[in-house]
Length: 368
Image (cartoon, rainbow, N blue to C red):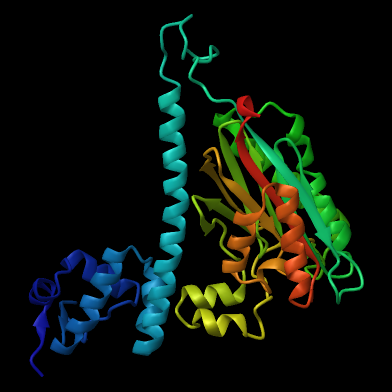
C-alpha cells in the first residue's frame, strides 16, 4: 500500500501537521503506520475522507469529543447527530442574538444627552408613549382530571402559568408562581430586569424543592413574562407556552423542553407524527425537587402597542390547533373574553387536562 507522509497527508486533507499530531494523541485520527525508529507518521490514502470529515466538523465548531462520537457512528446516525448539534447551536445563537440586541438597545439609550432637555435620562420626551398591560388569567380543571394542578396569574407586571405534576403538583406550581409575584411591586429598570428575573427564578426553584422534597416525581413547568414598561422579559422551562399575536399572525416565542420536541429538532419526527407520539408529554426539563437547578430560557422581547400575548399550559396547546388559537385571540375584544373562549375551546375538544390561560394586551395608557 502506498503511504502518504504526514506532510503530504496534511496538504491533501487541508489539516496542519500540528493538528494531525493532536488528533493522533487524542485517538481521533490515528496514522496507518508509525515508524518504530523515527516515530514518523504515515497515512493511508483512504484515510483522507475521515480527515476531511474531521476538518469539516471542526469548521462547524463541534468539540473534539463530539467529533469522536460522530466518527464512530454509521452515516445515517452521524447525520442525525450533526443535525442535532446544529439545532443546539442555532438555539444558543438565537438566545445570544436576543441578548446582544438588548444590550445594544440598552447602551444606546444610556448615551448621555443634554441635561434638562426632553429625551434626557429621567426627563421624558413629549413624544414618549406611556404603555401598560391589560390582562386576564383563567384556570380550569377540565373534564377529566379530578383536581387542578395548574396555576395562572396576571398582575400589573407579572404574567405566569405553571403546570404541576406528581402527587404535589398543585402546591409545586403555586409555589413557583408565588415566588415571582414580588416583581409586581419592584422597580424594574430594563438594564437589570434579567438579573432580577434570574434571582426570582432561583427563589421559585427553591420553593418547588421545599414542596417536592428530594424527588423528580413532583415538580412544575413555568412560563412567565415580566413587563418593564418598555420590554417583556421571558423565563421558560417545560412545555407550557407563550404566544404573541401581532398584526394578525400568531408566533410561538417559547421552545418546548420535551422528548418529542428534541426529536422534531433532530429531524427524527415529523410534526404530524409528534402529535400522536406516545411520549409527547415527557419533559426533559422542569422545576423539580431532585438534582441541580436546570437551565432555563431567559430573554427579552421588544413589545409594540397592539400586541396580544398568551401564556398557556399544554391543556390548551395539546388539544386546540394553533390556527384556532390564533382565530380565537384575534376575535376577542378583551383579554377576559379571549381567556374564557380559549378555555371553552379546550373543553369542547374533550378537556383531557387542566387548562390555564393568561392573556395580556399592550395598550397606550394615554388613549384609554
